[in-house]
Each structure stands twice: as C-alpha cells, then as structure tokens.
Length: 345
Image 1 (spheres, helix red, strand yellow):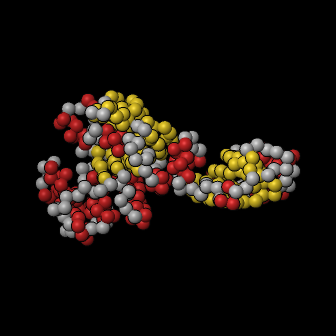
Image 2 (cartoon, rainbow, N blue to C red; image 1 turned 30 degrees about the vertical axis):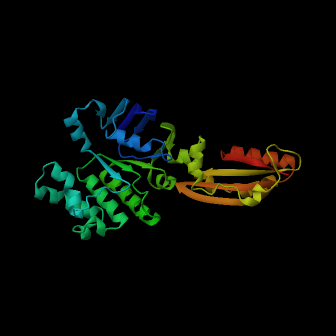
C-alpha cells in the first residue's frame, strides 16, 4: 500500500543544509497499522508529510496505492490526496463551524450536494460516537471529542490510508486509550491502512502491527512488534522499550558487589526473556529440582504482545560452579534470551 524508496528531504537555510530524512526505505502492507517512533526532531513528522506530499522529497520515490506521488501533476495529486486522510496532534478544527460542518467541510470542497454530504456525515458521527454533539462547536468539546471530529473528517472522503501525526500526544492516558480503541476498530471495519507517528512507545505497543524507529532522519530499526519488543538491536530502541517495561535494576542490586566475569564462589545475575510457549513452561522449578540450584526471583513481569505471551525475570542463581554451568546450559537449550547482568561476589 505504501512504499518509500530512498527518500531524502533536505531543507536549505542561511546556516546550512538540514538533512531531515536520509535515504529512508519503508514498506507498509494494506490494512496494517504501522508505527513510526522517534524523539523530537528525529524526522518522523517530515516522513509522514512526505507520504501525502505536504512535504516534497528532495529525492526518492513515494508510492501510495500503486501511484508514484512525486510524478503527479497538481490535479492528479489533489485527487490522490483525497484517498489519504490525516489527523493531527492539535486537531486543526474550524472554530466557527459545528461538529457536523467540520466533518462536512472536505466534502463541500469536492462540490457534493447537501443530501450526499448528509448521507456520508451521519454514519461518521455514529462511528466516532458524536451523534449527540453534531451541533456543538469545538470550544464546547473535550480534547478526546475534538480528536474524534478530526478522525471523522479524515474519513469523510473514504480514504484508503490514514496518517496520524502525534494524534494522542495532547490527550490524557484514559482518552488516549479510547482513541486508540477507536482507531483499531476503524482499521478492522474499514480495512484502512494506518500510519502512526509518535514518540510514545505505549501507543505503538497498544495498536501497531509493525514499527520503525527513526533517528536523525534515518530508519535505524524496523520489524514486527514482537521482534522489536523482545529483541531490540539499537540503543535508542532499547530506551523506548525500557520506557514501558520494568527492566531497570533495583537500587539494592546496583549496590551489590558485582563482577563482569565469573569468579569462584560468585552467583550469576540473569535477566530471562520468555516468549510464546516458553512463557508457560516450568523453567524455574526445573532449575531447582533437576539442577539443584537456588533461584532468587528479584523482578518479574508478564504481558502480551500481538497476543503472544512475553515475560521477563530478573533472577540470581546460587549453587556450585558445576551446577551453575549445567543450569545455564539448560536455559540456553530452552531457546530463552538470556542477558547476564553480572556475577555477584
């Protein structure tokens, strides 16, 4: 549905060139919810605006629904944009128009008659849960309701793609959850392809099928949600993942006398990652019974990503050198991801 091929964007200024995007390659399948996450200034908003050509790439190809956007003339581009809806962090509603009229606005621009517009707007009001607010003005709405108007307006032209630029950043956590639930429902009902731009890993985790991490205008990592969460490769991705997982070492552990290498009499401190079926296996009890080692569980966390169980344990193993060696070999055989934090003297 969306392909970015070697897309670069350079801004020219008196103080020199700014490379906002550098040879970005991205593929989004039809019907996916694809997340693009990065810190402020990473280039994520520029990237999403290149998809609908609000920003014209300096080089590269932007292909949306089999159309090469960079080759379209102004009339063709205007028509193509009708199939790419967009919602924003600050809603961008017209203060002088009611909820109904805000949603109807893009249809009026297309020259549709009032009956056709009503036939489109009324179902959208119901879809976003604002039928009873149709005659209200933006000043009379909460932040969540304003974003629902923005979503309905973006859907008015029956788009195939919905771009969400920090769509939940201005909302409180409870409202954010309701908006994400709505977007997920719209994705399933309308088979809509959604691209989510955000700096919040919780948003990505809640709704996205795949995610790309952008830093300094470059895609530094991308993959399925399960891949990114369970095996992040770059420091920036690890920071994003750690921001919503309980992976920080407790203060009591930081104060321990630890070595980076094993010495006689020391105890390994491990972080174990359980994925899928392994999350339900009695690994810890097997360690204790079969390998005669003591297991001190210091931190535990279990959650679900893409309906796949995923858990982490921070444990200290105690026992003789030989027993610890065989216990560690057993853990490796179970295809668990193991991170050795250190060895406690």
